[in-house]
Amino acid sequence: MMPEQVMAVLDTLRRNGFEAYLVGGCIRGLISGTPPHDWDIATDALPEQGMALFRNAKPTGVKYGTFTVGTIEVTAYRTESGYTDGRRPDAVGFGASLREDLARRDFTVGAMAYHPDEGLVDPFDGAKDWDAKILRCVGNPADRFNEDALRILRGVRFIATLGLTAEPATDAALRAAKHLLRNVSRERIGQEVCKTIMGNYAGAAVEWYGDVIGAAVGCPVVWREGLPRDLAYRLSVLLTDPACLDRLRLSRAVTRKAMRYHGGERYGALSVKDLAVKGDHLLAMGIPPGPFIGQTLQKLLHVVQQNKCDNNLQELLAFARKIITINS
Image 1 (tube, rainbow, N blue to C red):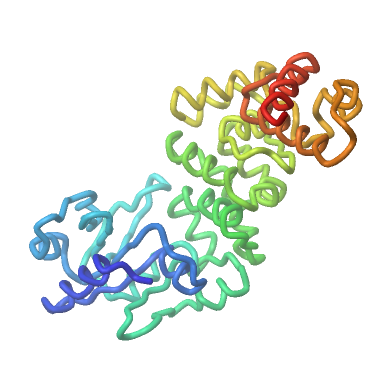
Image 2: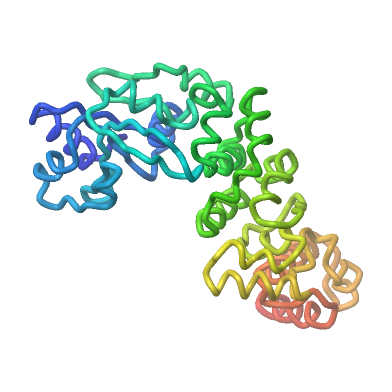
């Protein structure tokens, strides 16, 4: 399950006298039996020491102890102190232990480490919380969010994408700290909000933390279940004020598409019952009663949701004729 390249990076670091463990989201994947998309490694090697071991190493965040080997991100154990701006540490120190490095992380489900020879290193019971689908801060929740306000949105995103539920202390601190979101850059707000609303549990996240998301984007937010998996469309539903799109600093393509939807060019159909065309219309066209009626309506719903056709009767009937011709 672990790619050879990942094992090779771990082995190279260890053969040269350094510690090396998998950390981050890949561990949740390993626990769940789901192949991870990203692989992160933590080590006691300083960035310059680690980079010297790999010909293809590239510095990607040396200030924070990070370099990459191919697609694998390697970061030195570190401690952080002082968060004057409520976003980034004033000082980053290297030479920390693995436990100290894990202790600086935001949530227990992200504060685990693993190596095939040693198994799971889990000083904050992250595996237990993961099994119970609990979101819990490492240490004092208020401290974690006051240190870095981005963690507020990360928490909401974990709820939306991983199906977690915040335990009471984390929930209360997350809500109480929403005013700190002013310290987060527009770009990072946009990234987190987009990941959140594309999550499989986005509806629950928006329902529970709509006020928090609203504080981040600058306007009240709403949600509807059954939304198509189209980022621009979901944004157009979420944001009650289209001017808030500017706050998210998204790509021009996504912003323009979302604005068009806000301007009235929405799908207008979340299910077959929302279509302007009905089964009786298809029967009147000569389609015999039976499963083909339902199949045709599903195809018409798809073309509307793909923005290939407006949800009006004449256009849908024209599309239906094409479908009938193809299948005749």
